[in-house]
Length: 99
Image 1 (cartoon, rainbow, N blue to C red):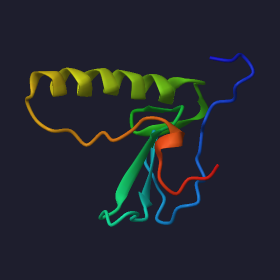
Image 2 (image 1 turned 90 degrees about the vertical axis):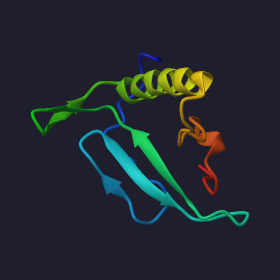
Image 3 (image 1 turned 45 degrees about the horizontal axis):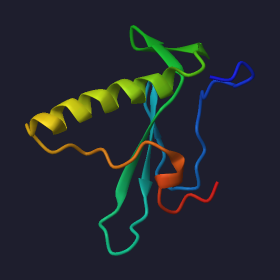
Image 4 (image 1 turned 180 degrees about the vertical axis):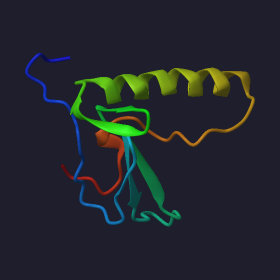
């Protein structure tokens, strides 16, 4: 983590239908290449306690939540228990995102 990095409190991507939860932002990605469309889930740096979103955020929290989730998805995938929904974890892999 870069010490000058700012926390991600909100996201504003060029997709319609943005929904904001306590700590995650969700977008509907338009279909491309004949697929049915995809949901993009972004873990922000927001903090929630007792169902209240705090006014400050922790830089890198969303990235760490994603890293932990990926470890569990890998574990479950390696055991062959069930298929998961994870497609990608980097902005470069999000279709129709030019930023």
